[in-house]
Image 1 (tube, one colour):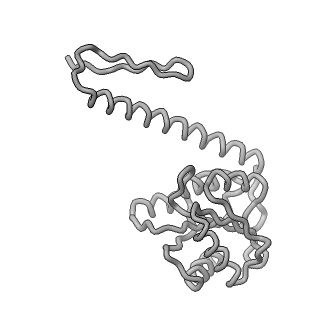
Image 2 (cartoon, rainbow, N blue to C red):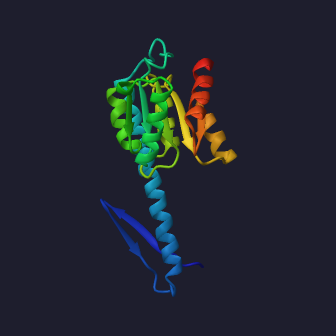
Image 3 (cartoon, rainbow, N blue to C red):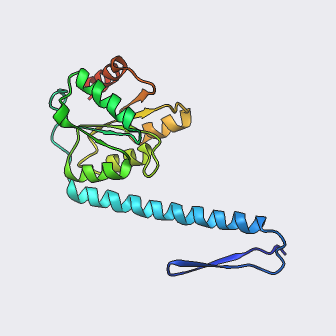
Length: 196
């Protein structure tokens, strides 16, 4: 019979019961890591559902039509690196977007706060961010009827087929690969806007 540690949840605390027969801490470390991962995943799922519900209340209906003229479009640029945000905002201004219509956020959490106040026509998001990833933000936006028509472009250095397919399955409109140029941003956005 295999002897394993047991974990009990009581309120905000976990209690670990360690059998005397356990002679190494390796089993215990793996066990605790797995519990923490499963609890973190459950909390993230719960947080995700709460965010989606709050945004659905704010934006219950899709916008009648999407703005397709660049000078009229509201844009949200999300990246945890200020340099990349600055480069993207500069590229957008260079190709005809209006500075006053371009907002930015340094992660998915502040982006969600901005999405509660403004319905953006175009969202340009980094893939890898510390708190809420670009893919998670995409899932949130596409799950909210009032935001689902927003064009969503992922900026990434990731080109893994599995990741690309997952984003496509969740309604991504396009990709911009890092490092990018103003010409590349313009070409990508022209294709996306024409397709809508």
